[in-house]
Length: 463
Ligand code: C2O
Ligand code: CU
Image 1 (spheres, rainbow, N blue to C red):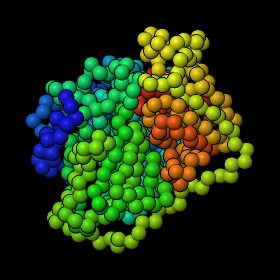
Image 2 (image 1 turned 90 degrees about the horizontal axis):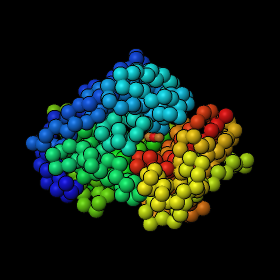
Image 3 (image 1 turned 90 degrees about the vertical axis):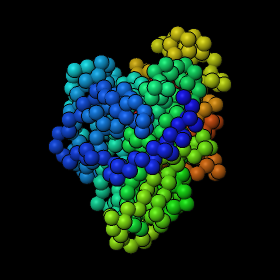
Image 4 (image 1 turned 60 degrees about the vertical axis):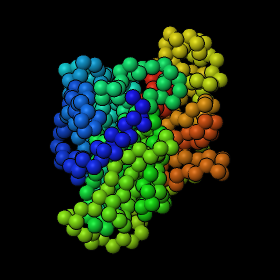
């Protein structure tokens, strides 16, 4: 099923799916113990007139329940595994306690079928985050195991509507089912990852969100895609980017936003017309994502449309005494990796690919959880000096910390604030600078989940 094939379907679905005026009905009130159950569910995500899709979901909803807290509160969640396979939950972007980070076989034992695990940790940062499975993530996230996590801040700008749009890129077969044949396919793993052919926002095709006339809206965009780098076009609407990966950034006028897998962007958008279409344009052909529609029944906005002035991003500390960790990224199709270390032996790329499905390496080492890539003293200021010596783009994510992005290349547009996931272009060199103030074993990996599974990751030990 080609992506294009769905285009007309999606457009038709847009006019008939007027129900989605609020993104979630299942917003869970704050600090009580949440019950989250991972299980199999049939749900319609493939659009009107299409069969239900067999999915793996949290609390039978796609996305999983929205978890919403205030900064400083504790998140408590009891996760029950009703799947046939082991799972865990990772709280993406949270500067978490290491034992609550949810990395199966690194920070915890996987939650076996029928078992439960209680997560409990403080939320010290506000913003837009998400949670997702972190055991065989390339399959479990592709089947629907993810949900939004929003942490409110006293300094959040005032808006009429706060809308979270969790965007996913599914690969469905002709029966509207998860395309299982392509799960684990070596071709995708050695190229750009498993790209989909069907886009949903909050589990629906091109949903419509009803808003007040002249409303000021905060859009929280989250990419739950396995591999697709999406670009969301906001038409000509006056939009101000205020946060990236949860953290407030230097405000900036934008008309489109590129989101690599796992990245988030928050924009403030003022409705200056009857409707605003959001489209995903990464293929060059606009694909309908969502529509914001003024509903006169909701009344008129009373907010003054003054320029938004979010809190300043955390400034970069002085860089004397920097611990530099060079990371030479190699591998994949059309790459220059000949051989690499895997489980203590040096193997050729052919053998790595065919016998072990390993394709990517850092400094000649295939990523695995039994090898420490670097040992870092707590509170050191660290620079991961990454060189993407591959033919592919990669969405590099660091667990447990937020980093500043620095480069010697003056042509590269860098964020002023901190991020947790950075999209690297082929042959790009970048420094990801962070204070190693969170002890434990932390992953640094590509969030194209197929790349991570085939070796593009490393364990950093901080103590
Ligand atoms: Cu959202 Cu290890 O990742
Ligand atoms: Cu990658």
